[in-house]
Image (tube, rainbow, N blue to C red; front, side):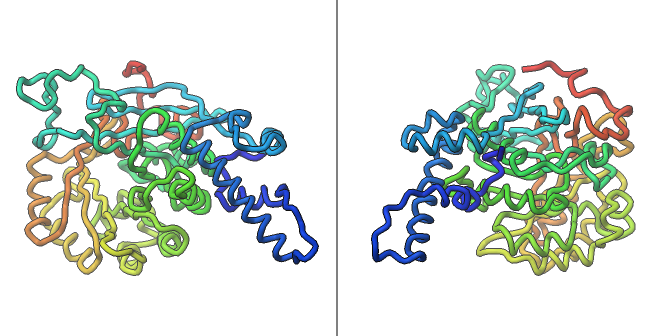
Length: 408
């Protein structure tokens, strides 16, 4: 049995082509017959992709414009995969985190991250004043849901592995170690299930795992995500984030056209290696050379993610080095004040430190934004995702997924 969400449209065409029923005329050559069979299989594959990914139909018998014989064949050979929700949590800011059960008993997490349509500008670290009179949040319930019409952007943060092998010291997922890669259908189905919850507009591979460590499965999943007959996301709206696996970065741009984010998080090899072991194999120079050579389309930029850790990488000297390092690379910098979690040795820098760092970059014509982390109250922010089961190395340092949270 094949899982449907593991198939690109070309994969499905290959499976359907032998089933094509072509009326063969006496003057038709084998090549002409093959072309007609391919066209018919392509048409059927488009129909099936539309039924599943755009109409959310998960029963073959409900696909009424398919022949009965084809529906029987589909039932016998292809299964539409579903993820089972073990738990879900909703933060006060509307962020919604899902804990999924996999068929082998492992678990992964995904998050829907909303951005508000009329959200007023907030001071760094300030929570929205939901009930303040005259505020755009006034009259909202204590908890906003991801179904609200107020959201202009809903980002699905999805996982690519159970755990992670990169062992970044500031990341809760990295503390666990790697259990296994996710299969293509397990990656795609996260988006499939989340889209049934809310009208997802963007996808970021920033959940559990290093996407480029699971290169082939992630690339194939992206092909399905951006297929116009599939989930139909814009290539600009799908972002792969990497800790810096240089050979995979060099290959990625040749295989699939999506956006790239790179976790830099340091401005010297000594400092970056301290928190990101991957730097010992592919140092900053090698990483940035790969970024300079990365094929970018018109008006496209690489995002450099920079997790700010108090006293380690948040000085003006770091800001000065950062400007020099990325000079000449079409890019922007996303500053991410560290999201603290139990068991971590690192601290979040002060808001003033972050502002000063950002201003230094802006004053030197570097586009620099500060990520207002969402979902921190349910451990759904950057670097806070993990499994309940699996290798789970070091989880004795951390609270259980649901011990201090209430289900939604």
